[in-house]
Structure formats: structure tokens, C-alpha cells
Image (cartoon, rainbow, N blue to C red; front, top):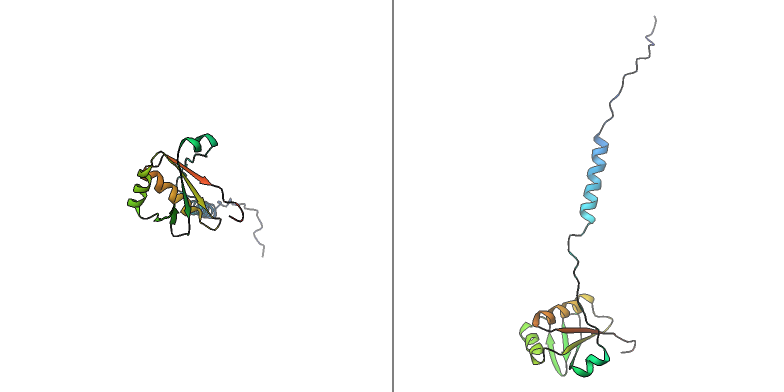
Length: 133
């Protein structure tokens, strides 16, 4: 009995299923790892010696991560919009100098910057926190 030993080379089609799976996995990865929140810029003016002598400086110190801050001897909260507007309207041309300790979250600092700007403050600046201060 003779076996059929002819070399019939049939061309096999390449399966595209694994390629499509890889493309979908990459698409899913990039969609989940990308951020769709637009970046925004905050304009912060740095105080200089000449600007401090010409205008008043309102010093604000953030006390905790709940938005509690002090200006002079008065306590304020970031969530109290009416008191922020009243604080800014006392002297709208003043430089509002914000001091934050190293343990204060950046989001609270940026939130106070935004709230002061929305309340009408024209000049907002950040004071550098020194070690031991």
C-alpha cells in the first residue's frame, strides 16, 4: 500500500483575530490612562520691594486643610463666599499674600487663590514658607 506523499502545499490564511485583539487592548489601555482634564494656568504676581511700599499687603495664613485661614485677627473659611468678597472689597488694590505651611495641601492653596480671584482680588501672591516658620 502506497501512501500519498505528494507535497501539496496549501496556503494557510493568516488569522487577523490576534492582531485585532492586541489593537483593542492597546486602544483600551490608552483610553484609560489618558487624562481629559484640561490644564490651566494661574497667574501669580511676585511681590517686589517697590510694589509693597506703594500698595497695602493683606497677609493671609492658611491654618488647616479644611480651608480655614486668618487675615489679621479675623477667621475666614474658603467656603464662605460673602466674607471673602467683603475682605477683598475692603481694599481691592491690595496685594493678597498667602502663606501656607508645608503640611497644607496644594489643592487648598490653589482653591484659595481661585476664590480670591473670583471675589475680585487683582493681585494675589504666595509667600514662601521657611523652615522653622
